[in-house]
Image (cartoon, rainbow, N blue to C red):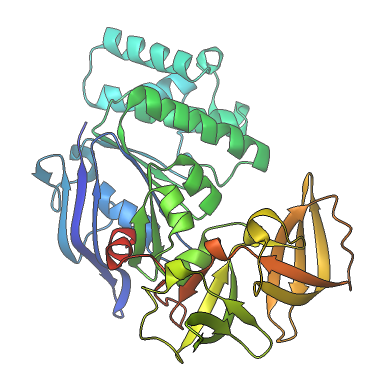
Length: 380
């Protein structure tokens, strides 16, 4: 096993296209780290540079105690699982799994032992004589993972391995991968565009945009303490609601004011927002931080948004309510599915002010509502 370290790694393609911009990241020994972000954010390019499939323009990559910048992929002691599985169609499952070991001249008896043990671990021992065309998508995925496992590499690299599977099978395979990692405890770098997948699998999640790391932290920290507006909007389903306005002080209290919005901010935010009165800001509220009932954590004065229900989306025991404020802001509220809310209904949505965030303006506006400056540094 080994840690993987990227130190100020940059990748520039011809035409001065910067795919990865000065990324520094440490994947600790036995850690499962997920790179997530929209298409074109640089996550797959980063993974391919670690694998040696892309040359780096500048910076350093270490696997274990070796700098691997100029070491070819086959000598980096890593195993990669691709989106399209990359199985040899003319070989059986057994031969696909054994192929890498044969190239390394591993004794035949040891190859047989490793392949059969791994096949049992993945519940594919009855498929060893089949060829890939006779397998389902989930079975092919297991074979691809098995081919990586038999090599006992220093690190696993996964490039969107579940994206070709249907929704039910993706959920099942997520559980399988998490179970395997607990058992094998191998350093893992995993790429996906699915933020739910990232939150489920990762010990840490690294959110990227335009080749730049926006935040690297534990999944719950990413969700509850997003470093900036991009992270807050990207992580979470449905995404965080945003309202534009200004900070205003009145009688020793601090308010977020919009044309038709007036919300009193809790005392916990005052220190981080000191000296910003009168400045334009963006208020962030997650859908579960809104309710059409004023009780429990939603009780209190000066925490109400007036809105009109546009669409209700039933999701089993809960319902997502898409509403529009008088300022034409679109907001989503997650409530109990039994609430009597209908399209076109006027509602007063109560805000759980203990969960709101305040961001500087802009797509990557910094979250200034994190309690201390140190919190912002750790979140980033």
